[in-house]
Length: 140
Figure 1 (cartoon, helix red, strand yellow):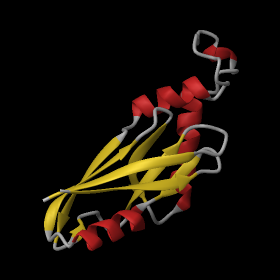
Figure 2: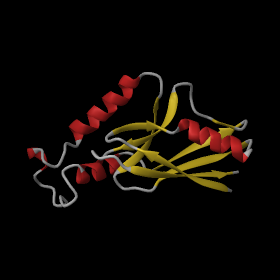
Figure 3: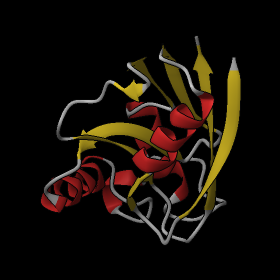
């Protein structure tokens, strides 16, 4: 088993591609077959496998989640109790709970078995820039 951590600097809400970092890690491990687990070590960001060709897909996904779970200062969110870390914090926790904090990707032929238009993304849910850490673990 091999493991590493990567850091992603975010500039606010959005999807941040880390596919190439994961590919490099798998390549450096030299495994022909296995399972890559990606795990984000935060409760206000998540991971998704998503379309990597048309950036409108990522923008639309971000807009959908902003409408589904508005900021805490939106009148529809007046029921929130956890507000001490800002209007974006509790909605970020909810968005993270609705998505995933870990992903599993098969490895075959020494490569990630992603589809043609799939990429690995950190989904940042907070407004301010953050340094996010993702653990990559390859099981053979």
